[in-house]
Length: 249
Ligand code: AMP
Image 1 (tube, rainbow, N blue to C red):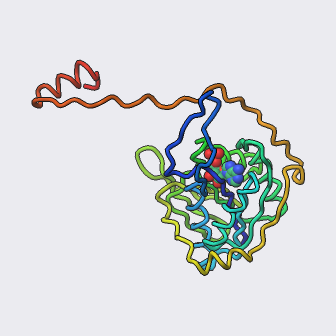
Image 2: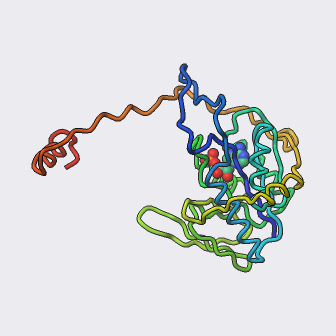
Image 3: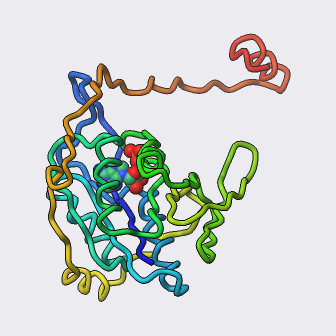
């Protein structure tokens, strides 16, 4: 079975994000970019399934600029077998990505597509769900455990207040949550080996998909600065402040 893992190049999660002066978006100039953390978890899960003998091939795919090739190389260094770069300088919205992935799924016929539950740059949490809808496939979102059986996959989902396990018929879509696994670091020999692994280059037109943005960002603002704290003399004063000033009691 093949596993397709879409990986997005996003602003690194350690970077303190700065909003552009005109509020049109986030400043990306000279900012460190990395693989979306949930996608690292997706690559790791695919590798574990292959190591367990339940999958034969892992394909990582990214829709984005030329530099997204580095993101694919990271996936290849972790252990994926080959990559596909769908090159575009346009802002990639979930629907456009899902449409491209649908075509790719029709070409590659994977048994499982494992995506991140959300990209930390746009926080959309939409692509996996849209892809499932476009394909008419089952989906298990926010996975904290994936148990691949014969023709089915059991996905334990992180839901409000607990866990829910669903059984999906393959082929299926899974999106990863934080607790699914801890992604491995790529070793130096694997980073070297990854340089020789193939990356196919495509364009959105190859898949007949128009990636022109359908959404317009009206405004981006920094969160309000945190106010300084105050020291209280005793518990009575704390309770009084929580009740009368913060209004949380
Ligand atoms: P989102 O719906 O934007 O929050 O993204 C959810 C997941 O979809 C990500 O974690 C990726 O697995 C995948 N994805 C979104 N955008 C892209 C992209 N441009 N290239 C590859 N994968 C993507």
